Image 1 (cartoon, rainbow, N blue to C red):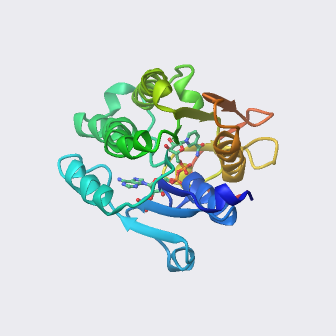
Image 2: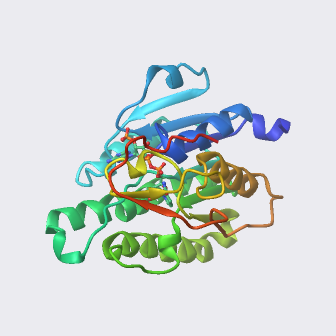
Length: 248
Ligand SMILES: NC(=O)c1ccc[n+]([C@@H]2O[C@H](COP(=O)([O-])OP(=O)(O)OC[C@H]3O[C@@H](n4cnc5c(N)ncnc54)[C@H](OP(=O)(O)O)[C@@H]3O)[C@@H](O)[C@H]2O)c1
């Protein structure tokens, strides 16, 4: 840990579980302060002295700008925002209700745009900072039963690419990480999941490694995109008996 890194403050969405939690734990271990966003947190995690949990439902878009603005006014320092909150719903398009399509896009795309809009001025003011999105392999190519999810993730990747151009002159770095299947609770309500062998799924820690690499790369350089996937692509179908819970 560098002395510079030890003073940094990061805002992380989806910090209660899975990838966002692993990123939070990694940055806390690196000596950073973390402000975590999610609807619910367990007390074991929130006991960390440098972790500040903020209970917020990012899918409530009507109330979100006001909630984020109130949070933003309380911040004295911010070095980066990492957007990990999101969920998956899969099936043929006509199986989705209009509400379900809207809910998916609201959380996976629109809430990330609103988060960026609110906190970008903090980063621009200090002329450096990082904005990192957790995209997906579904942001890179479409697939059967993934139309709505892929649309939200393709949209997020386009947003990240545009914002990167827009922010380059300000010193703010924008990046996106596109993981393949990661063993998390993401799959709990789905009828498929990655294989159990270590070479058949990513761990949340693998994604946290990629975030740490992006954040710690020399100022003046930017890693704009990282695509990572398990060495073997194995998908198990059916409802889980024992959900994959491998932590990195
Ligand atoms: N797992 C994978 O295979 C995989 C692969 C590629 C990309 N991704 C992406 O990675 C991101 C994280 O996924 P994960 O695997 O870590 O899933 P996860 O274990 O289910 O965690 C999802 C996180 O998002 C938060 N969240 C969900 N709905 C929310 C809401 N309405 N408001 C605020 N927070 C909310 C959850 O907290 P609460 O429930 O407490 O609110 C939780 O912290 C997602 O964007 C997902 O699309 C996942």
